[in-house]
Image (cartoon, rainbow, N blue to C red; front, top):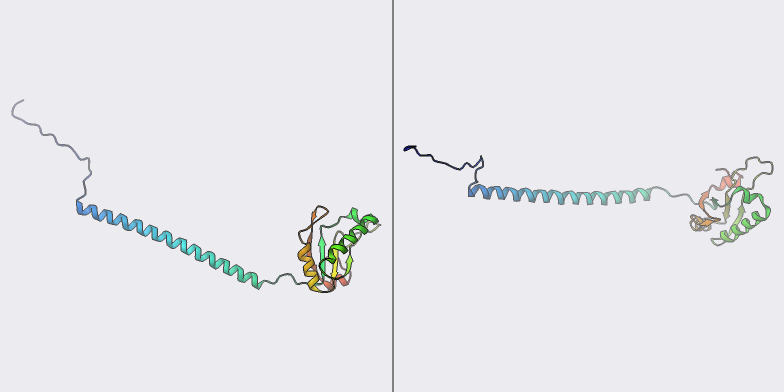
Length: 174
């Protein structure tokens, strides 16, 4: 082949090795980015905590401003009795005795009223409810708190204050 020589060189396939000063700049930039990402995460977490504290504070203040139920001397119990129990005279008397005994645990009451079904089948206002009228709101408040959520005959009792004027007028349907 004569006096021609072939020189072979290895190709770097388009990548260049960074110079040492470029390497340190690149490393510094990566460290700064990592630091800034961590800083942003910390700031977001702190912001979320502050928002949660503000939310809790605002909810507390809103709850403090909203009035609770106005206490009356009358407590209305629902889900205590059913119509069939009220038709039977003996069972009705047992229920009245139970209500006098349970209601008396919370204070002196002046009246126990349980509307009964009409023999003619006509609708009766307040059917299935039990009304306990106390001498004062302290007794009725204790009764409402003490009886609400209790089980009676397998049912969970709901106890609420009832308007005194409606009770006194015989309006038991509210």
